[in-house]
Amino acid sequence: MTVNVLPPASTEQEQPPEPHQSAPLLPARKRRRPSLLPYGLITPAALAELLVHIVPMILGIWIAFITLNQLSIANWTSAPFVGFQNFVNGLNPSSSIGQELYSSLGRTVLFTVIVLAIAWAMGMLGAVLLTSSFRGRGILRTLFLVPYALPSYVGTIAWAFMFNRSDGAINHVLVDQLHLFGGNRPFWLLGGNSFWAIVIVTAWQMWPFAFLMLLAALQNIPGDVYEAASLDGASLWKQFTRITLPMIKPANAVLLLIMGLWIFNQFNVPYVLFGAASPKEATLISPLIYQQSFSNWNFGLGGAMSVLLLIVLLIASAFYIRMVLPKGNAADD
Image (cartoon, rainbow, N blue to C red; front, top):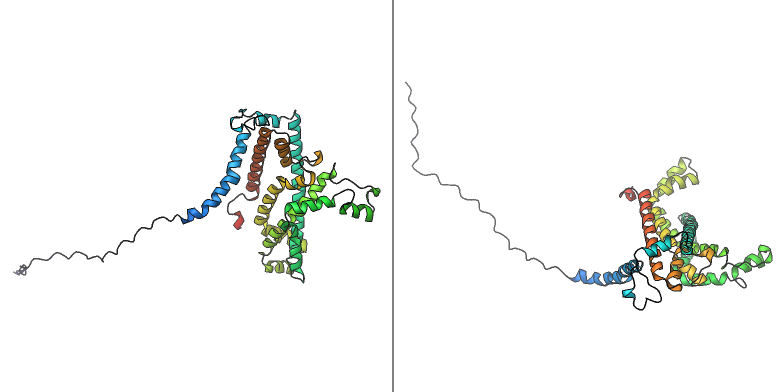
């Protein structure tokens, strides 16, 4: 019979494990007080934006709902509130004001399309020509930017002298040297020719901006793409339509939107060429708002037209962005 002998129990009590000793804590970093310097730096710009854009826009919207004319402008803060009556008067197609508004709106749309097409085509042509390296490219690039660098009023006044019927440079070249128009000097700042006068001047002022933006976009296209296309037998037109236009589509979309808004709101050129009252054939929407507000002293109607113009441009811009750039990452494709 086997007997298992157990070892004697230890008389020493097992010591509990020593607690884990953590590393000494570092002294807490003092919390920095928020600096007021960034807010102080942006305060002047914020105040300027508030005074130049936000406050006038709010006042313009408020003026659209009151009767503000030469009788109530002295006490304009207590002018009578008329609600949407100014909008009804402006949009009424049976009234003379409504007919003038609709005709000027259609004329402005036509003006925007023509000027935008001319400016974009000239800018694209100049950008494509100056993409390649040749002697004198820097001089041409500088000359192309001269209309954009000149102040708008200075360039428009120069064009007004050239459009002069009796001794203007345009009639001198067309009538005296080229013997066009049967020897009769046309009026360029009156009648139907006045519309084409503002088209020419505005396109002359706008195309250098299109040239500058398109040139920057074209310079980002790798040259290897064109070399591969030429080796595959692609013509210059196919390279332009299949390579150039698709690769500059994001920049082109933004360019057309910005230029379209600028051209649609054109005021300086008609005002300098024709004065406060533009000819009927050349009355755009912005000069019409000015005439109603400051010539006819109907600030309420002018404010209503301004609000309607703002709504039209916002809807057109949103629709354009939705159609051209439907996704937020389209510009990165």
